[in-house]
Length: 417
Ligand code: HEM
Image (cartoon, helix red, strand yellow):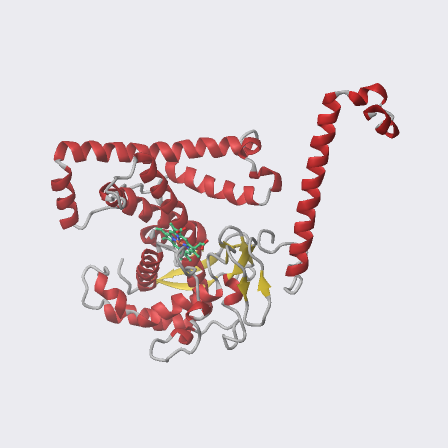
């Protein structure tokens, strides 16, 4: 009977084979699943049709070493790819704050820093390769091999610091060691994590601590480098604002010897802070974020974002929304004047994102940018580099400039050396 009913397939007596039956069943099941998915996709597309369509080529993925600068500009002025220099500065200060380690990577090469930079470049490259999202495939490629080697080096460094710190804690007694460090204000991130306990009183494992430290090294360097580089670029293009920032810093530090900043000084640089915020508005280092819609979202105009979709939220576009920002393309720090009451929503300006997964390092980043900018303007005049065309924005994992961001530095003759 079975043989008869399947005769149209011309399979002959083989058709009675239980294996063939099983194969047919599996094939039908796969086909049913494929059709169900295709229908779900079609249905989703229909529901999303009320939203504007993305461009065909996805724009999203497509398209303080001050002594060092003093030396470079000793002939009068110097052309500098600020992005490169500031990345090293940011890594140097992170390594100090996280591990209490002086890498001196701005002056001499460091294997650890080279590995972090290599990993950042490889991650950005891998993002553009659709088939490389599977680890087992990626690790077979030369890039995958380099990635694993660099990862090993970074992990080994962090492990060594954690082991060493645990030994010191045991030999010196954790209480006395940490108390002395807290008093001298030299507690670093590893110390804080070694002290941390979860809600059940359980300490973090070495692996947990390593993961946190590595995350902060990665999240904290490129983002700050991007932020600071674009701030310098904007101030180079607006010498009047640059001069006003400089005067503010000079006035603040006129009685400070040496010319260093204290915590309290950070609240006394209102104009400089306004300039930083306006640059983060026009050139947000993290230009977009993704969120998974765990529930249906009803928008004010009645359209619905269906549950189960990923939403790409463009911080770049939010910051240039013409219904919120007058002349959005114009660099105007007075938009952030704390003396002028702002009517706009707090969600109109979100360089550090918003909600429970916002940037955990934003205070650190703002502090670092204020200090670096203030001390740089005290020593250098920043000018556009006429030899280079206007920089083109390059959205990678963070907002870069194509071919780097080139500016000219001129030492201020009367500035502190
Ligand atoms: C100008 C500098 C910075 C900008 C613009 C920035 C921006 C952001 C943004 C937009 C997010 C959210 C990403 C998302 O929602 O998917 C984020 C997350 C994060 N940032 Fe930053 N960031 C900066 C500096 C830093 C620094 C200096 C650190 C650490 C020292 C840091 C550590 C982190 C971490 C750990 C997360 C993940 C938080 C989580 O997932 O809960 N960031 N950052």
